[in-house]
Image (cartoon, rainbow, N blue to C red; front, side, top):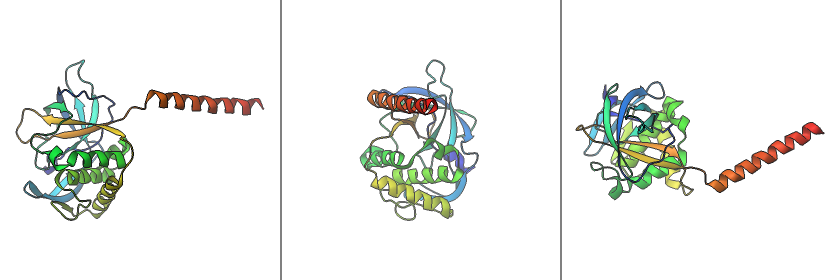
Length: 233
């Protein structure tokens, strides 16, 4: 099945990535949204597939305790032409400096990937609906292999599923216009042991600063006090 070549989507784990690489054993479990959306894809000099399934892929951290900090999580694939066999253990390094085979830093893709997550990503986008999950994956491929805001033209193109493609273009447009704060910490999982295995990216929310937590707590206290006064009245 071609979409063993696709790994998808978003992090449900909340963890902090250190700058140093760490070893990780991952089991591929299946589509996080229940199934995939199918379409054709092409990246110049990389691969062309007439029908691949795109969408969230669920994973399990099988690293021996106490280092299995990811738990059950989901991640997007970055390599269009790499393999990710379901039901098997795969071995990764967790790194903030990706990847030896994709050259994401020099091409500006790191910035495009971060903007895409910050502009539109939510945890439910990956797992609750096959269309949103697939559209985010397609938009992510475009961010890796192209520098435009359209999956319909350029060095990366996709075709055949208009609903997914239109939504992917909306995501890319939002990412291109995004100027807000960083909302997601991205962790890159670089394959260690096997030729042509997937490299992945997964995300966790940026923690709220302590001052922000204190403000939220104060607002919550004021709301509770008002409710009590209403009851007393």
